[in-house]
Image 1: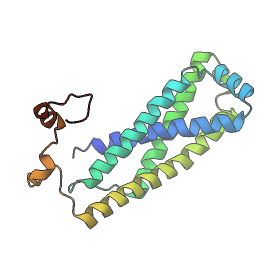
Image 2: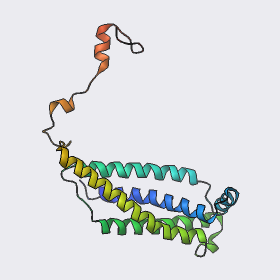
Image 3: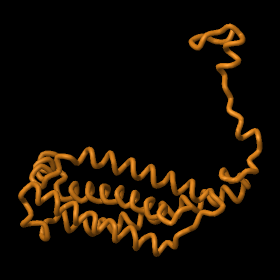
Image 4: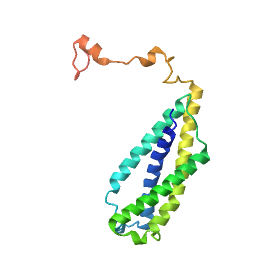
Length: 186
């Protein structure tokens, strides 16, 4: 495992955390749909649905990569304190930078440091970083427990049983029996 992979995983998880806490902060400040829409447009959030989609993809990718790493014999486990600290720093800096860019582009930079959405969002970044740390640590622990309990083979080793590497190809049996792809076997 390369030394950069855990940082990429945590960076992707931090991206999902930034989007999650950001969304919750803006809903807490303006729960009314009309007021919420006005607040988002006034602070430069027209791109927000796309960012949430990318952040969700980052969440899935980071958790999937963490599961793969946890299943490897040579995978390393980061300390919970390090993970929380790393996620907290990434999310706080990322959220503050994102808000500054959004407000700079919308011409509304003057209220950045006193905006309730920004202040609540900064506090929520720490809460979401703790949740992300717990989720990641729990997921890694479960995968390691399953791996140790069931003694699963390492996918990178050459000692994988032959039955795991043989692919089932139903097309070969169908072409010999005279049936088509669209119908049941004859």
